[in-house]
Image 1 (tube, rainbow, N blue to C red):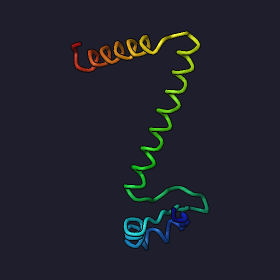
Image 2 (image 1 turned 30 degrees about the vertical axis):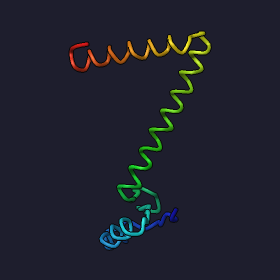
Image 3 (image 1 turned 90 degrees about the vertical axis):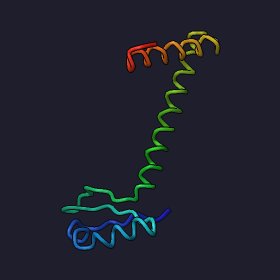
Image 4 (image 1 turned 180 degrees about the vertical axis):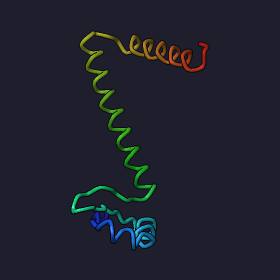
Length: 100
């Protein structure tokens, strides 16, 4: 993975076309600073989507882990958990679409 380049807001403004080109073609990433304080990150859409997906999977994993621990504490079987998931799915569908 490429190193993140730190640039000033003034430099970013005057070289925005170059930043876009380097971000899209070379996968460069930039942190833009104003008054020596980082305020904006510039990265490609594909990199952004990859990070979003990674965050979503991390969240899913953590929620799954917690649910598993809770189910274990309550002594639920896999069949009981599956039945509860199906009931929740039906409830959400009914709330969202007005039918079951």
